Image: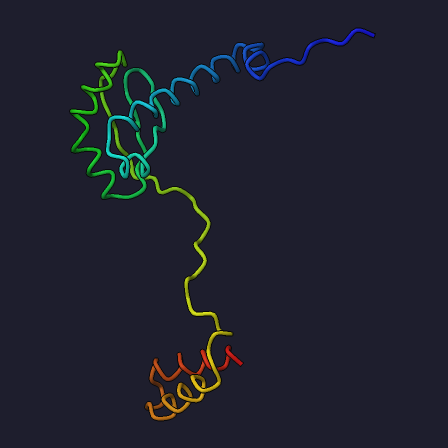
Length: 147
């Protein structure tokens, strides 16, 4: 039995015209992302990404309003830099589009790290606070969870 050599991902993507077009567009976006990353400060580059490029319009998504504002300020010089790299560019649009990220684990105190003496002190403090005090409620919950 004769085996055929395995097809590469590029071969699979280029086998269909629609997939080849999509692969070429993805390659173009990746190339533009690298150019943008090289043209802006590192911290700014980490907070933005090339979202699309079509008919000379580059769309960049920024993580927040501050990043978007800075990118808009840099747009003229960024455009000049990209055009000097043979990018056909008429306009840069910046949109705020926060990344979807998993919530960060809290950096709170481990409840097992609270000693019995600290628990007694927190309980005593809570008894001295007036009824209905948010601090009193918080201390009572903390001590209750630490048991």
